[in-house]
Image 1: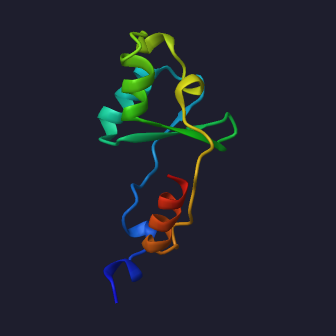
Image 2: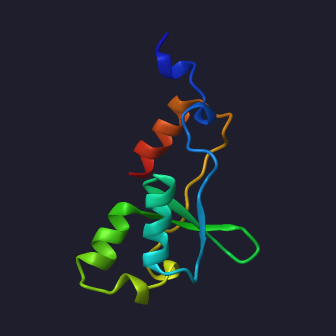
Amino acid sequence: MRITDEVLVREVMSSPVIESKEDESAEEIARKMMKYKVGAIIVTSENGSPLGIITKTDLVEKVIAKNIKPSEVKARDIMSTPLQTIEPEAKIEDALRKMSKLG
């Protein structure tokens, strides 16, 4: 039996999930990442539905490397979609398989 056979997603996921609204600036998102020490933020709609994700890599590739002012670009413009999710009670092995399949 491998260790991944026993570990559940909820045991390794970041909690609580840090969110931003789609009209927040990249600058605000970067500040949240630093404040909460996370590498990604979930972008949500006004009603709280998850829309996409922004990672530190997204900020570097889509904002900094293109010499765009972080205060002038919105989350909706740089978030990655569609957002892939998995239930917290799923086995980590299933999450790894899903991530591998999706690239």
